Image (tube, rainbow, N blue to C red):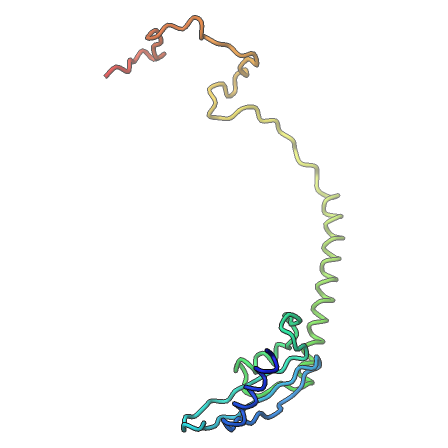
Length: 168
């Protein structure tokens, strides 16, 4: 199917007077083309197209970073002029410097964490028994053994402790 699709694209390019100009190639082997603004066979003006032919022909082989940021900005019309090789190499060098600085910073952080932990006093351990909303908070804890009033309970015998009754 791929060869058929490329044949149709080539035929369309020939019929539409589309002539792509090679603009540049990056250090990864990707080729960049520009199709200048032109009028098609119906007289409509077609705006400029920017095309990349990836070095890796299969879409599954493509990964983020396979097209340099500067070229991607040109393809997406964020910049008007294509980048130079010097610009791309300068950017790559800067990225490597940032990676080295980041690695050095992480190593310094690991070393400083070890000394900080030694200088700090150990945390104070407190024992918290119960919860403030529990009726026995601050008093003796309730007994661990279960108690039941199942055999001695009489219906209607319970009354609230403050003397108020709940009858309507």
